[in-house]
Image (cartoon, rainbow, N blue to C red; front, side):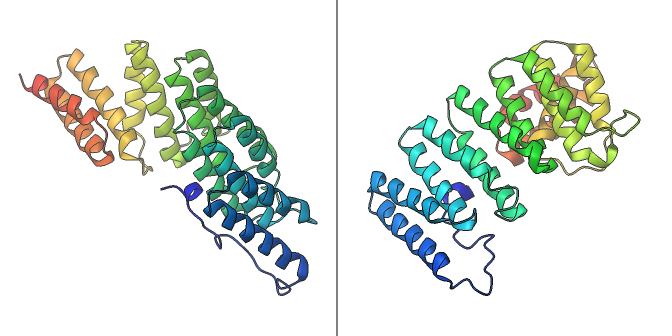
Length: 281
């Protein structure tokens, strides 16, 4: 369950010495009154009550941010996607100074993870683009990279390869040194990029590009990648070695791919087992 689904009421909140002041108490009371309505299943009244939190704010702060998160949850569950986007745009205006950087990053990550389960590709594209636009000003490179990677994966799913190439170019540029070479200090990010490129070129059957990407991938040292990323890279290597009749190397890569897919819970582990058998024949 993501943070977006949970009630992380105290996470990231910073109370000052005068947190008992009347405006703060009024905001807090209004917020919990709205939550009570939500718990009772009175969604329309809850939305109105959360909106009242925003109206009571004299300046942007934690309670308004939290109210907007709740309003997003409600409108998303109600299928009011345009309203979800409206609330999200408003929430993003809080990330520069109204809430802590860590709280903002955790919240946005969890929101995007939750939204990514939607089958509405147009909605997802808007969410990612709105986030990227907001992050240009916030200068949060880590969150920018994660969001752009999600957008790239969406374009891959949509087979929008020209748009995917543009995203990959941006991601590549963010992981290069001043001399234009891949920054090996950003090994984990580089492997994410390589894996996404491998998926694209596999779909396009560009074996020459796949060979180059695989060679680049195995030379990355300083990285702690997700096992799904390594599964993608090793599967690519296994297929490449199989085409070249390098059966021992193919066996090694398919076995590593299987282990990584198994660890990540990916169903592609079954396919790699079949390739393992083929490499042994």
